[in-house]
Image 1 (spheres, rainbow, N blue to C red):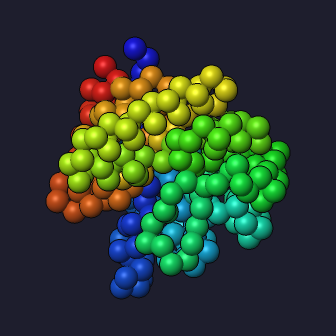
Image 2 (cartoon, rainbow, N blue to C red):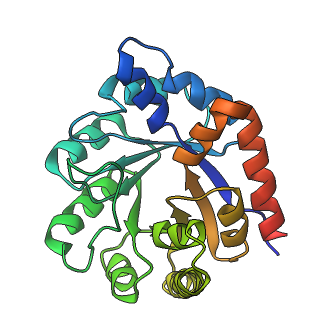
Length: 247
């Protein structure tokens, strides 16, 4: 069995807490540095149109100070493309975005949005930014991602995680089988495969068993657990869960 997946930590909700009161505390950069010291392989930050959590200066500071790669989550818009080209993060994950949503709902419609997504994939790739498309484990979406030349897909695990939390074993099994098939399809097409959304210790351990999964990106659960156990501790526990799954 190959090595456990890489672990990317999303620090958006550290910024959410900061913004609720204003000022600079708690600082998402400090959270990122603690996560990396505890074993995270990279940091994810979602710069939204309304700047509800991560702000432009956060991206600048993360780029300047991080010792590990930054994955910038972003919508496929002209504004965000210009920002990504200015900062040149290691990676950019294109996600769907609606202002009224609490968190990212569903995957990006790559198959139906080729004219919008394609030029962004091309522009970012030409700048040396590794492009990932956050998509549902749907054959048509995976095929479209490969056709547009994106080197990476991140499979949306939200429906599966929700079924697990709701203790709906039939739905959970069906969604996991979709993820398994999607990861296998992506690998056949030469795509690097990541996964994320809604993962906790249990589901991260389970999905790490899929050999095609190279990276997990996890945020809300770990930041929430850090309130009780400390960020370094929960990162260590997550890495251990992923190792058990892959082992």
